[in-house]
Image (cartoon, rainbow, N blue to C red; front, side, top):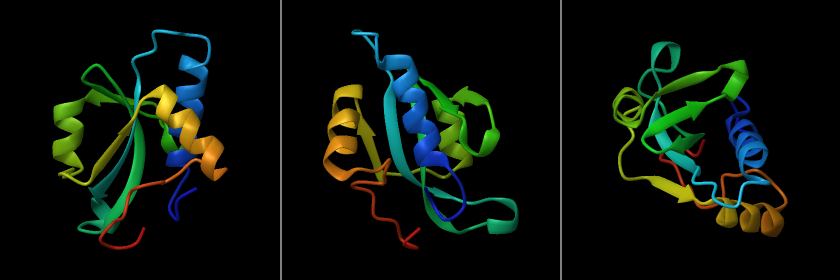
Length: 111
């Protein structure tokens, strides 16, 4: 779990629920550095969400947010610090590390 929420666990659970019995699951788990808004404006931190064919699904902290990848990346000022995982890669990382992530993401702020 991140310092500010449950995004890694929420995204991982969504991926498991949707892909566990779906051989052709095309969902992508994303770990990315985003830039905060509102009270945390300008703070860069790690965040996890699901990418489904150009649509972002973010169920962290009790939300149920869906929006276009383009809009989500623009709002979060998501640049090149992005790691994407297929369901197969996701399962491998969870088994290797014993946690939801982040696995490969290093953020500017350390969060």
